[in-house]
Image 1 (cartoon, rainbow over the protein chains, first blue to last red):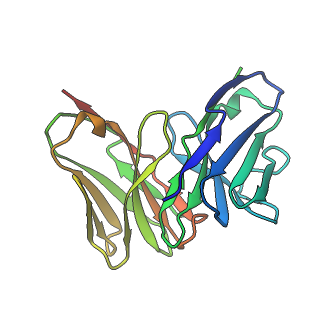
Image 2: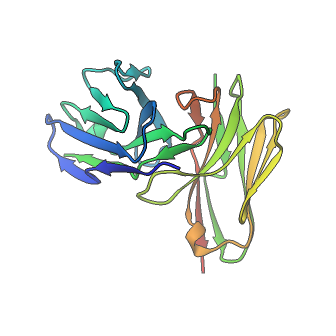
Length: 114
Length: 113
């Protein structure tokens, strides 16, 4: 299994500011995923982050709004830029288990934008 | 269009009772189907994963079934406990990799004493 931690666990931010969310995994993984879960909704994939290459973004998400870093095989950051109240969501980091199809999720970062 | 639909949206049951959650999907191609439990304020935790050839899999009091012909799955919870109160999410994967997942909207289960 993989143990994933995220920082911060929650934050309240002002419109127009940016927040960087950190994701740390206890083992080396090739692919890391960032998801958004809006209130009362299920998860939506934002992007896939591979170490050493640019992140791959899903339709509707762009790098200028959600820049991602992946400096090594155990760490990634997601920045939510120029925030608006519509960005209020839970942001989750996820990894694939090595040699399995199981996907492990971090505890999430609950973001509220005022 | 790849879709995963779950029913019911929400469910309230008494402690000790059984319940069954449903999942219908139109995802293609199909690699595997996963059920996750998500406690409030936490990330989803995997309960079961089933491939095309598997039609039932258990994890303690949780039993998942899969009918790949009709593209339906169910999650049966036996002898429910208060700690089972959570959202249950059905996820269908088009490949073994995690970037081809289609998530259902979830079923919110509340178990009352």
